[in-house]
Length: 599
Image 1: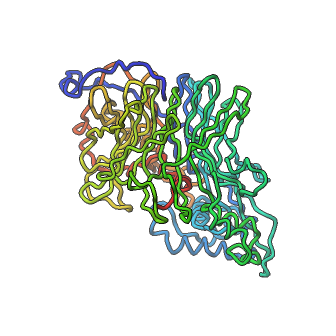
Image 2: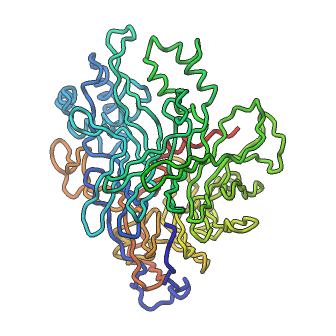
Image 3: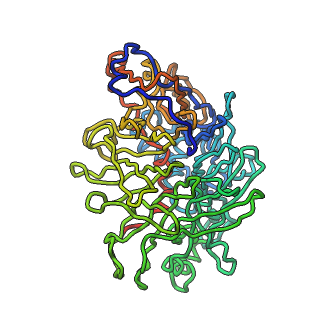
């Protein structure tokens, strides 16, 4: 959030540690995991009237379209084989016995067989299979116990169920109830296609991979941010690409910033349209739309973009903010890109862009070394400030109305690439990032938000073992105060009772009242893939639990920064409730659309 009141939190860490009231707390916690149709919820952003934007994942009763399975039964054979060969890898999944297999083949699986079917579908990259997107948006209204789903582009099957094939990425909510973000189109089945085989094939395709949007909670406003390429009606751009990352109100208009496709990759376009190339050679095996689906991920060049919309919802301007690489060699066809992530009320935008690794390069070669670095888009300039000697990649994440912004930079710590969060002032003539001390030297830290008081919230690693992709370190939410140069584990702001119940893995947003929105691990009754109490062979397992992620809201008590060290009360428990992963990692597939391979 941008416009925030001055904090009343003033105590130093040392003072808090000496405070006699050991159970005084800085924050009370409220569980917002109130969506009963999904397993996990994540806090995204809140406005100043109490509305909270949530993301939900892992839908119960995923709507598998069994009528499109292969008539020869091969699909069912694969599912049963998957279950019987790999069930030992899952503590809560089992073999599919004969009776369960019969029900599965009839399109009426039990919860165990439905789980295997979903795993099987998620592993299928071909257009011949129904797609699993399964990331939704919910808005929690204050003084209620429910959250309302806000579908964007998803549509219903004939049975009335939404396809759940879209990935909806919410980015924020304004005080006026405008929600914004980006989403994919639903995957729908094409008419049966004859490839000369024994059966007609069904292919699943979508109209676009990512499109920015603005929606009002009450449904009165619906606005799509059409990709810049799509504004040219003389050329087929195959859906284009756009995303909305932030909104601001400037001069009475709504200004949206994000990214948009600005051109087509000539190599990918050749694969689509040239005789004898990729798609032309495959049109006997698949419809052209399916080939577009395969090529689309590498089809676009995208830039940071700004759209201005008036009070009637009419697009006033669409502005390409450009990229940091300049004087590109005419034979260099690499997909350079940029993205705008946050804007303040003064119109200063931060994000990232490709820049030449050599900051003084004026006549780059065809294969000139390039990097993706944090960028400030200001007064028609794209400002690069990353020190290449120490950092090899960076982003600027969010900016407040004083021009103070936060982000992260990659560096090597003890031979391992880690992200370190920073803050800087976009108004300075020379941008100098400051890197606070976080959980420990080798901890990766990542910021999510900053307020006008200079309080930054985010997440960071709290374990110091040598990690790996299969065994990541746990993360906890943090709060850093620029004014006090003080770094806090948000969990220690809670009472010992709350610390036992919740493990906050990310602090994502902080509003005008210094309320923090985040995501936490909790223990919850274990449910199966149909949302029913977990059972084995039809017998419900009493007291079965599972770790789930829930959105949480932390409200300040006015006690100041009070730290509660509850290690003794919690018996210094070492149980791993999960590594703690943020909302961003859930949509890494979407994020890859806006990253381009560095050459």
